[in-house]
Image 1: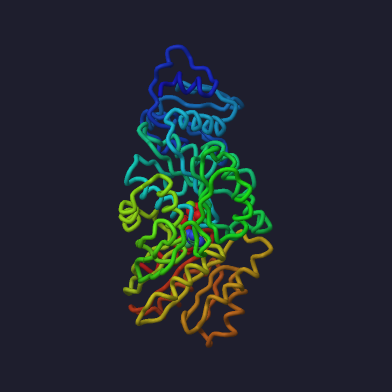
Image 2: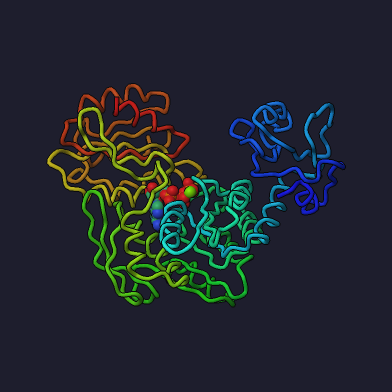
Length: 454
Ligand code: ATP
Ligand code: MG
């Protein structure tokens, strides 16, 4: 776009002579900015206005400028706006209308990124698809995803995250989805919401911008969603394990690396995904439902799911230094996700022992303690031989597990005692063992993972 067009979209003024500067990308991070970019200095955290020189050095050809900042000697064409974040969103909306792709918006307590990648793989077999990069799912990430679209984009698949009321309302109105997906309701961020009921209300905000002739795809096993979706005037499609869903998964079978399942209702077909965890079947069902809405042939969906590209750092198998297999899921954690991963992990066959390394689950507010001790129901000595817990709240789970485990099989460490954890763990691990590592990002179990691989 030329700078004049961007100025018009933002209601800003462009100095004479600069109108036809060609903008080929936008960036809010001067370090990764590409030549030809419009720099968007955001003010949250590190004020981007302080990095204008670095943006120029990296090849920025123009910049936005927030009106309350002193312009001083900025040696770059500027568009002065009231608020740079709002301007980023306004520009995103403008570009979306200009390119006019179909939009699929995905939210849910867990499974957003996985489902996003699956949907993109399925739709990508037939259309030019642009999807959210990595996990860029917030008020900045969504407009950046939009502005990253190639002009020939036919479908935009965008992940939407939230931890407060109103955020999805805003993102949904910004992206005006043709299809909205809610993967599931869990307990993530319950600290802020107080109840699953309220979380369901907040997730339903993804329908606020849903087009009149759009469709909501949601997990029909969740009564909190069913009751709310009934009031919607748009079409709905449900998926899940119960037989009242439009897409129901049956015959779920996993080995160490993949999971097969059969979908009944429509289409009645077998599928395989290259990952374990029965919960991922739900994500695949959501993706298949979206594929159906776009009339993707079943064979193309099967192929796409069997080999789709998973964003790194989710549940994945890696090799430890002794040859042990490690199921790594160190990126985030919450009660539903831990239970799901433990269920998948205990089904994996091994000639050695199973070991669980679990870190605190953060942001659970006053339910934290009960949700940590509640994990005891999923951890049995016959299935998981040793447990290594890390973080202050996990001390409570350690106490509960101590009652049913033999001596010296349940260990607890403070967050800053990971070196000891690793030393004890390494002393125990044998090549044929399998290990699962999962915790909230703030506990940094990736350090344990890295140490095990060294
Ligand atoms: P974030 O909020 O961090 O963006 P996300 O919603 O994008 O997370 P993913 O990255 O797809 O979720 O998956 C994160 C973890 O959540 C997985 O590794 C797994 O443990 C769990 N998970 C994924 N899908 C589901 C699901 N459908 N139901 C329950 N747990 C799930
Ligand atoms: Mg995500």
